[in-house]
Image (cartoon, rainbow, N blue to C red; front, side, top):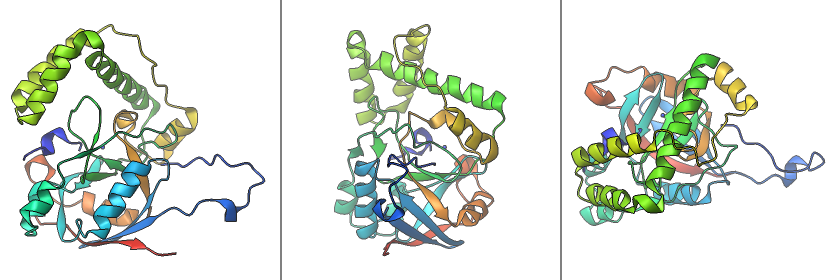
Length: 274
């Protein structure tokens, strides 16, 4: 199933504890090490997105990320892994691949955003904004000026506007059509429906607009990221070590669609013990 062109393919954790709470009282977050053909990357999974965290841990423990490739590498955007074709290439049993036919419900937290190094879940254009069960991406993009952050904020709200219009009761016919064409992999029809709903959504303002907080803007200005994906794609962790490896992966020569000419492998993924 060729979903890659519909997957994006695109983090600061704010403590809710009191100032007097000691570091020992803070929860220990799960870390995962990806040993790649270009070096090691350490990911830290957020406890604010438990469905994505637990799904990722299960996949790691089941060796689902071992010996697969980064199939989509877009310098100054994202590096992405977990496509089904890559799973087939490592000779996984077909029943195992069929068992991945599910989505992870969207989990949005206002403190998790697409800063450089953020770990996000790819998805199709499904109306629920549910995530791919296995595809993930790491944000690579560098600093953004305010002028582009402002445009990114508008893109966020355009996508939110479309989401609420699509799920409005009066548009159930369109919602049913989207689900039908996604089930049949008819992406040409999906594109036509998407264009129609985009036109219908023009001028719609009956939703809570998202405003990028100033502290997040400062991160985007100085560290970088992909703000336009916020509130529409789930962020469930971040790179805490090995961002230089992500930089190296992002710099490899690629063919059409961002597929590396020479394969970049995830050799092994494992849970790190404290």
